[in-house]
Image (cartoon, rainbow, N blue to C red; front, side, top):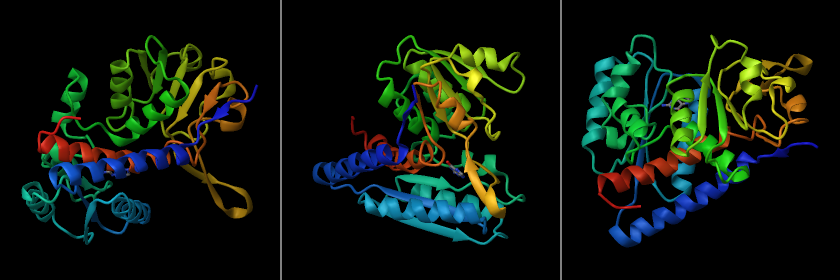
Amino acid sequence: MAAQIIDGKAIAAEVRKQVAEDVKALQASHGLTPGLAVVLVGEDPASKVYVKNKAAQTVEVGMKSFEYKLSETTSEQEILDLVQKLNADPEVNGILVQLPLPKHVNAEKVLNSIDPDKDVDGFHPTNVGRLWIGERTLVPCTPTGSAILAKKVMPRLKGVNAVVIGRSNIVGKPMAALLLRESCTVTIAHSQTEDLPAVCREADLLVAAVGRPEMVKKDWIKPGAVVIDVGINRVPGENGKTKLVGDVAYAECAEVAGAITPVPGGVGPMTIACLLQNTVTAAKIQKNIKD
Ligand code: GUN
C-alpha cells in the first residue's frame, strides 16, 4: 500500500494560524506584541530568501519584525555589539543570526552571545542543557517541526523505536532529545554506524538528517514505518536544471513506509512556523507567563 504523504505545507499553515491566535491573546492579556530580530551578514542568496520569508511571515502572524542587513565585511565586534543592543531591547523577544556567517566571524562566539531567553534558534549551550534535562526552553526549529509532523500520523510516540540518522547540533541531537522526552526508545545513527540499513529497519519512526541525497533506500524501511526526511539537497535534474531531493529515496521508500514527508513540502515549511512559535514562547519566558 502506498504511504500517506505528510503535508508539511498545510501543517505549517495550521501552526502559523495558532501562533497568530497566541499573539492576539498575548496582546489582549498583557498588551504585548512579540518581536523577532533577524540579522543577515553578507549576500548568500539562499540566506537572503530565508530572511525575506521569515520577515514576511513574522508580520503575517501579527508580530513585529526587525531586520538587520549587514555587509559581508562587517567585523565580528560590530556583530557582537549589535547582538548586545538587541539583548537589551525590550521590544525584541527573539534574536536569530542567520547562518552561515562570513569566514572571518566566529559563529559560535556570536551565537553564544545571544541572551538564552531570546535564542529562538535554541542553539545556545544553556538551551541545549535545558532541553536535555527537561526544563522549559527554546528548542531548535527543524527538530520541533519534524516532531509535529511525526505526531500527526503517530499521535502516541510512547515506546516507539525511533532512529535518527545524523548527529548534528542543529538537528540530530535535539531531535533525539525531543523524541526521548516523548518516551521513544531512541537510537542516534551516523556515518560510523555499523550496518546502517539494519539499524534503520528496526525503526517505527525514522528521521533522516544526514545531508546525503537519497541515501535511505527502500530496503532500509520497516514496512509501515513513519519516515521524516529533513534533508534538502540540490542535485542535477532534467534539461540542465537542478532539483531538490531529500536524504530519502522518496518514490521507492513511499512504497513501503506507512507515512512519509516529501521534499520539498515536508519539513522545510515547518521550520519558519516553529521559529514564530518560539518567538511567542520566548516572549512568555521573558515575562514569566505560563503556557
Ligand atoms: N541557516 C539555515 N537554516 C538556519 C536556521 O535554522 N537558523 C539559522 N540561524 N541560520 C540558518
